[in-house]
Image (cartoon, rainbow, N blue to C red; front, side):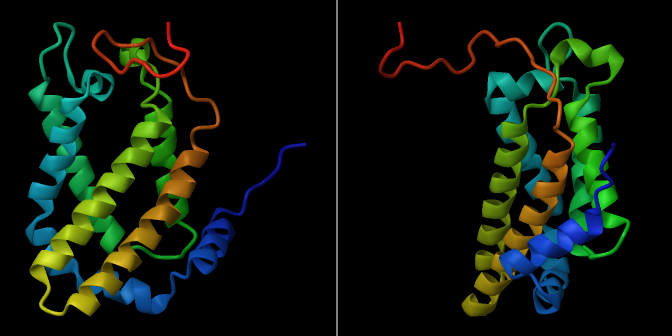
Length: 192
């Protein structure tokens, strides 16, 4: 028998667990101008980071290994749309379904790119961590009140963790991919 998951209930339970309340959501919304004023810079830095690593770079290249600028531009616009939506984060019935859909899209490659496999979950986790750090640094630099900046960054971190939990639920069946030449190689104890 299939189990029906109460996604809004799951999100609310985790919000309670991490301590994200209405005050935290209002802090996030209060950062709108600061975050969106630097939104394009933030999204560009996320994708610049992806391009630094062969395992993540390949999702943005063409069949010759060159960066597909059109794809990269579309992904930046998509990330900016997600960033705007994150500022308006709501604990309602729709939001967790949209976030789950993002996880499913990243874990199930389209047919024309199926040879790449899923975007590995570790890159989704790393991306959220990268964004958490970038937003925290941005708020520290741009907000006059350091205590308020720290509390707003903490609220962002909690909200992003809620999203990550639901996104990763879309990774029930991650599609494996082949190692990329020049990608990471374990060289520690026991490596031969």
